[in-house]
Image (cartoon, rainbow, N blue to C red):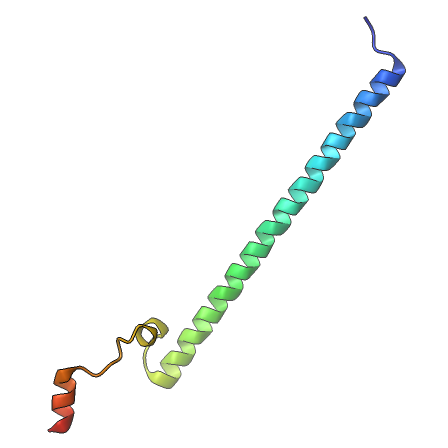
Length: 82
C-alpha cells in the first residue's frame, strides 16, 4: 500500500504545523524565563540599594533594622543613664 501525493502532502503539512506549534511554545517558555530573571534581578537590585540606604542613614543593615534588632537593650539604657 502506497501513500498518494495528497496524503504525503497532508502528512508534511501536519508535521510542519506541529513543529510550528513547538516553536511557538518554546518561544513563550523562553519569554517567561526572561521575565522571571528580569524580575529577580530588579528585586535583588532594590534589595541591595535598600540595604545600602539603611547602612548610610541608620548605621545598620536592612534586616537588622527591619526585624527590630536595633533596639536599645536594658544594659545599654543603664549605661546611658550613668
